[in-house]
Image: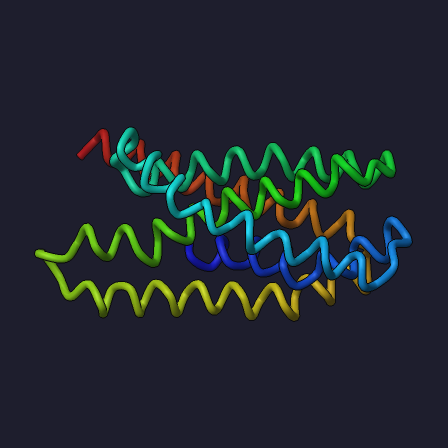
Length: 180
């Protein structure tokens, strides 16, 4: 989950200026300024993650729901790019970044703190954060290579596939959890 979270989150943060410049012919400075709004949106994701966790106590289910919603919105981004709709695409970027940043908070902060009395929470946080950084690395190189060879629409299909994969893992987890 950590790999997928940062693959999407940092992939957007890294590549949105290029996407906006190439897809919508925006000036480079405007696309960078608009991209700076993504981390600002993400600031509120931590509070959102805590609020959601008060209603959904299962961490895997909570992240799966965020990935399901992110996947649906990525579908909207794909449509926005295909229809050349700048506002749909930009709002989609912000919403996806918000949702996966919420998952990042769950993975790197909320879950380790919840485990505080059972295991070394610092160790758990470090390991999970390492997986998140792996996702960041994959996004920096992998998404750029995909875009160079196949275009940005294919990148978003890949991100949608990542969301579907994560939701599939959650379904399997929830099935076995009920059995056990």
